Length: 566
Ligand code: SPV
Ligand code: MG
Image (cartoon, rainbow, N blue to C red; front, side, top):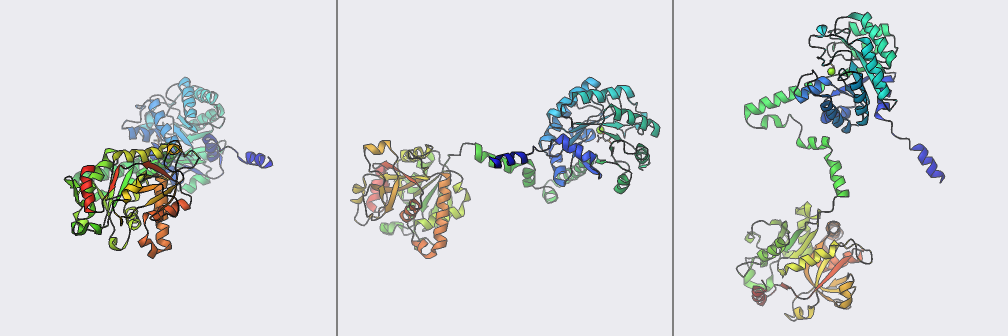
């Protein structure tokens, strides 16, 4: 219990953005805000290291393609700043122009900004609709001091979070009224509740704002916007006691220059070669958008994609068929007018499996079926199925993205067997609570298949339950698979199985481990060895019993049977 108490004590809530802004504003050293005008630029400003963002009216209106004259409505600005707040963790101060109306509009603005986690608003003592200070500033009328103070007081009364800041912007220098008027206004606004004074100047030197700073003498924090007096060294602002400097429009101006250059080049050259290396790669766009986070969340919250892929192992020659497979691989032998592989692909496609990877080896160039993917086992003559399957995993990393069927290029099966395997994996877990990683199709009629030839290879299965009434209502698990089981034989594996996505990953990893642990033995590894090894390692394979409904092609006689099977 003591531990819990200590942990709770330590778990102080993160400071609100409004509190974070207060800290920036009142810190002893000079701080900086960077302009941004949308979610993207705000995130870039934060990544650059800025402790806060200035949501500039000039830049937001410019990015919206309108003038800085309140042409964008205040709710449109609010929308933009909401995106900016969502995209960042640092505090934002909105350039709120004149508050978009009188004290009443200001109250509503403050409420809406707080609800969007905007930390502060700056309002300027001009008249609505305002004009940018750098456009005929000296001709611009200033607000009545009392009216502007009422606006500040109304905003303060409306805020819920005591840390939310209202910064009052004094336009006396812009309008040509001089230092005394600037100070008179600043004093009144500070007394009305402004957390800081933004003193603005359109001069190319800092003389005006420095005279203000000297006379103001640190009554409350002072904010500067050195757009016009940019040649003044920042140290000078520090020395004169400024608290905050706003780089007020440099993101939008940087993007304008970059966009003009890119557009002109692309238009001129009618191709992208001249710009590709000079612009951000698409991957950087995705990164800034947080695409990774969504991918992680999809894994957590979306139902898993049950669209399965399939791997068909068709590398072996099939010696038993003699001259028939001298140049043509077994999977490409014709059955009822189309290659065996065509029938297999059709069965998969009819159950919605479109992504089929065929592992080729012998007679590789004879594979000419459209719509299939291929992986090659160059060492096909001296390796077995597991090595071929390894080639598929080496070639296509998507095989573990969803469910995965694995079957052989010389095995025909009825479509419904695929559905039965899918059904076996669709339950959340087995009735003893274990989660199957795969389901295998097992023919109970194994004796009959054995009669088709004494030298025929068969993967015989020992299961947790013999086929019968009980096996209808209970889950049946693979215990062992072998060509010569020591114990009971419950059926023959058809050479068809379906893995879940984690099962496919386990399959890939087990194969990789086998290859690393014993490279020589790996070449001779059979599928039944692999599956038995996985089962022994605690990987549960469900057994799906069928009776017949499949055919493997080993002899010329089988080809005849295949004709009637399809
Ligand atoms: C803005 O960035 O919109 C400002 C600062 O208000 S200025 O453009 O300098 O007036
Ligand atoms: Mg502005």
